Image (cartoon, rainbow, N blue to C red; front, side, top):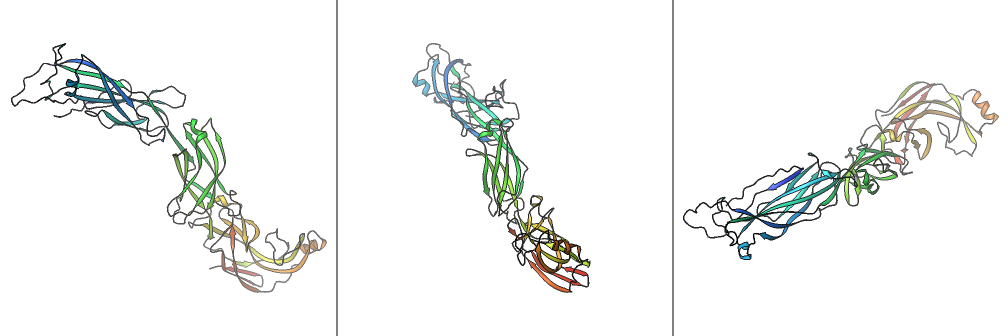
Length: 452
């Protein structure tokens, strides 16, 4: 015997799984052809159906949610059927489900528009239960109910060859009834981020000083107050880490604005990001965004060089001037009187991926040998004053001696050569390499700087 499938279309937006009335012959089949029986009359039966709660009350858009509908009872046969006769008949189950939708928590529900979800039912025919699977394609609030039409009777090759003939009617019967479940609800939501991915930096000495401004948009907006954006998961092989700070919520517009501060640099082999930021409501992840924590890594190439005439000039230097004076240290309020023959090189800096250091580091101080140089990186480069100096001595800043020195004639600077190896640091990260084997030569007013 074969159970025949059939799909029913309702006037509302309903999905139907109907495998027809699967009715089994339980009486003995004769060896000779059975006579064609007249079509039976139809009785009624009362059907009780239930629907479980959905597996999850909140899911991310595009995620399936499931509930199980079951026929839990048949009663009130009209005309009546004896217990013996009922045990001898087959039962067929034709399931359908109705899906309704609201975009807000307190809004009115109406049939969910086509294309906003997919719906499947796992079974029908001889099954008294079915698993309903709803996959929402939009964010919002969902109500689902199920109905089952149950047919009770006997079939042989599609006709009633053997029938139950109640004494009250004298007519072979099939009993038909429909049960509808209560409505069960669930919510679908999604969180998106801008920018995507998130590119940020880090400051070892002052965490949070370098950050990326990020906005998360929550749909439905009703959930904004319960969504968190402070969970970071490091991907396998990753080295980066980050934190959220300065978060503020706009409940009316469904947005969360916050900073993403880098704490440790992304692995050089994972330039697309190695940290995943998760937007969560409870344990449900509603959106993710990759985070790239860029860090200063090295002096870039090609190295800047110079060869040309320079004019010696007098200057008064201190720890706050450019170039800065540190050796020997000066008392507060004093300056070192020098004659300088220098040029300024534009030194490139690259990140751990070998790319030009990003704009988030613009304005960060350059440190050499642990001391502030009073120059900052900008556009992935920093100005580096290089040359030779002749020192006269120290005096009080703003004194007549300083003024006379600045207005006087420069010292005669002797010819000289030396090699520079200088540790360079940005935002607490030591560049590797920094300044290595930079050769400086001064010869009769010509300054030459070579750098392999």
